[in-house]
Length: 209
Image 1 (cartoon, one colour):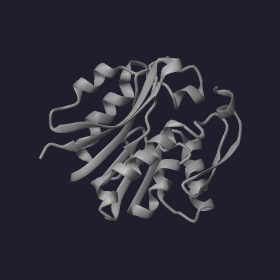
Image 2 (cartoon, one colour):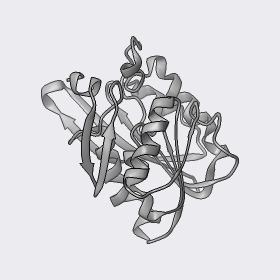
Image 3 (cartoon, helix red, strand yellow):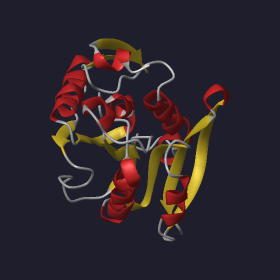
Image 4 (cartoon, helix red, strand yellow):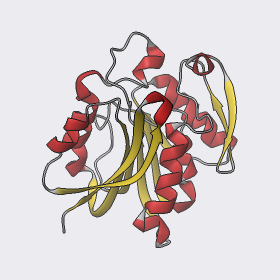
């Protein structure tokens, strides 16, 4: 299953032409990246209302999610801890005539000050240890990435803003109970993989009004 992600790949998604470098998570058909993007396009209140939004895509990888939202953005930031991913996202923007602000950031560490209407994070979905560069894109041992993501949100989310993040039953579902009470948590999409006895989700966070 991982072999495809260890080679160079070309993909099409939401009218985008995309290249994925070796040792990166590829936006294959049925991937969590496309699941996340398709859910946001349908479920985001700002997007369905026709608003132009300030959008931050954390852990952008190839850039597929953020670039897929570009038509709804007046300001688009793509960030990733991996220099390779930032370079790839910038390249994919250029291939599609899209020029987002791309930079390296460990979750929120280098995100410029300011508030975003929409923050998206297709985060690592498994709790397994990280053994190589590819598994860094897929694994979050101990839920450390998730916890830091939740802790930093309030500094960057606009009062009426939305957060969408991917999650999986392969992660620690109990961590969802640790989300601060200032947020309203809503499951907006779910896929069940019976043969693997796993589920994946997209959740939305908003401030309690």
